[in-house]
Image 1 (spheres, rainbow, N blue to C red):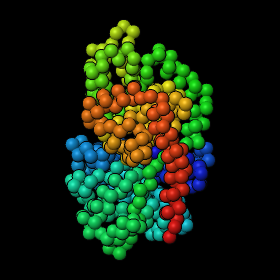
Image 2 (cartoon, rainbow, N blue to C red; image 1 turned 90 degrees about the vertical axis):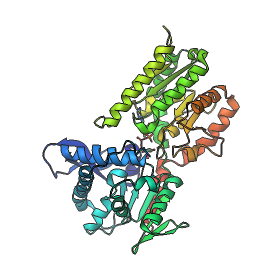
Image 3 (cartoon, protein in one colour; image 1 turned 60 degrees about the vertical axis):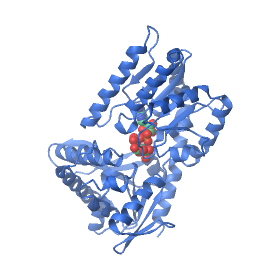
Image 4 (cartoon, helix red, strand yellow; image 1 turned 135 degrees about the vertical axis):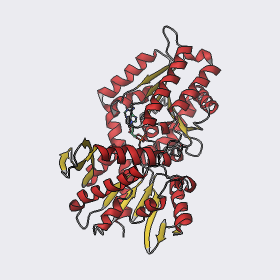
Length: 438
Ligand code: ADQ
């Protein structure tokens, strides 16, 4: 997300405001202003308590799991909910003096849902938009959130709301119509409630195509591709690249690969799976658990199937640059992107963007990623799977390994046009044009 927004700001100018990522024991209102690579950022620090309640607490232990349909992992604590509201209020205090009357205000993601309302309370009449990078959950899931209505009502103070897909949009519209009793115009996307109208639409995000292609031209990308190929010594490489997050379906993916090796034991000589998954949100307990689970599952399969010269699954717990990822994606003949739920998933698009058009790899993609709506291309693009089913994953891997070059090419050609054309610059243009239109 950060990469996408950086590109947007470089293109259009403006100020990026948010948390600095730093935490202090004592509260401080100091605004850090910086100019880097054509982009001005204004950030504030948070206290340790605020990070605990707002970031690790309400944003990442309540909203993130709930919005990814994981009510079993969601924690509902009044203390963290209040911390979330307080921090959003503090953000509004800090950013308010920076806003000129004719500025467009574009707020991003679940950490900042109430910010627009807080700014309205400080007298700002600007055009304000909000984009949600993650799914919007079905109404009956959302109503399990205490004070859900209070949270959703804050969204009605924006002028424009953006969602990644029609599915998340329609869940939001359903909530407004059924829980709030709002009037909905399905043609225009207008939602009217208590005299105010907000427009809600789908704006599927894309990759920074030009930047990513430029990364692919670098020596670093070529070196990464060669290193990957040298390491698999003539076997077929299959790759997964994800933040280490339970929404990404990593243990389920390993189960599917385990099923494949059970079904085709001889294939440990032909296929190697490389999973790159740098840790994220390590202070949150559910993230520590997922890491342990993944290590255990990978260890089990490798323990059962390795030989002195063969390790079927390689699990790499660190991040790589986009240039290196480009090289790895190009070297891997299968890209495995199987989240249980994902707003969009840009890795799927990056995998396609990195392929050699003369000999492209196969993308296996979860039906529950927003990206599936764009990359399935009427059944002739990505190979769609149900990520919960080890059998489905096993069959998809078999299909990918057996796929003739002609079919790989035609699937690639179906996908590449949307990956190239529906890019992040286009996404920003669409959203900002709609936001600016009165
Ligand atoms: P994320 O959940 O972070 O983003 P995703 O879109 O897959 O998910 O990835 C974002 C970026 O992180 C990609 O550019 C990718 O290359 C990079 N990345 C992932 N794993 C990496 C690794 N191991 N090393 C280096 N880089 C890595 C949220 C939502 C998504 C939505 C995006 C953008 O959860 O659904 O697509 O925002 O809106």
